[in-house]
Length: 301
Ligand SMILES: Cc1cc2nc3c(=O)[nH]c(=O)nc-3n(C[C@H](O)[C@H](O)[C@H](O)COP(=O)(O)OP(=O)(O)OC[C@H]3O[C@@H](n4cnc5c(N)ncnc54)[C@H](O)[C@@H]3O)c2cc1C
Image (cartoon, rainbow, N blue to C red):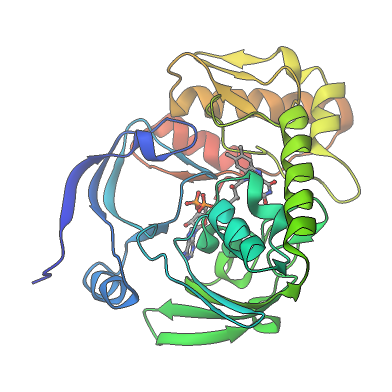
């Protein structure tokens, strides 16, 4: 018997950056690695999420267990080394490093991913990447329990890591940052935030960041724009008028609206350029047959 609180039929919508999603059969919110291990051993099929800023959750909900890691939020600084729990959000990490005169996390100031999500996705922006300064990752798997992986063993490349190929959970990570004047770091973060204001939607417009990955040597946004995607909409969601690789949930849209719109975006680029875009956004669901079908066509994980 598990002695940790579980929230049954948990309404997840407001935790997602898209503000879409139905009820989750069981949701857990561990605050420590020990609690996480206890839950995961009890719920071996549980799906693990951070800040749900790259995840489309089905409006029809999910019939399984979900573990949300945002309570695992320890930060330990030792000289230029920094250890952070998987639930810490990028902006908090960027600000903490800046206050301590440590450079390397400035890119995380403007988007809401957790450390775990950022490592899983190998998040990047403004010429910096989560793997740049990473030394090692504290991991968990059913087979091995707790173990560590070095940067090389994480097999990082564009928007991917070994955790997308094997069932490995990220519980924390250690980085070696570069000492730098705190004002210079702050200036770089201000510049990054300024760039975002003009190029990306803020969270006031519910969205999940870039919808599709950039094909090698190309830009998904440019391809979508040239193919006329800025005019596209489905139900309560539409393509952002300032950048064609973002979907905005403007009128209480559903997950099916998002998937139908992604399909239209995918089709218009395929038709015009013969290029099949690959989604960056991930999906949690399974109760709606049309959604399952669209995920298969679009190759959404
Ligand atoms: C406004 C906005 C701007 C964005 N800008 C950028 C950007 O510039 N660059 C960029 O790279 N991304 C960007 N994103 C996308 C998103 O923030 C990143 O992909 C981020 O890394 C996702 O983190 P998360 O905690 O929200 O992940 P979630 O959505 O919670 O999860 C994403 C995936 O990671 C897995 N995962 C999460 N935590 C763990 C863990 N601890 N262990 C194992 N697997 C885990 C989940 O199972 C899921 O498959 C943006 C998003 C928004 C909304």
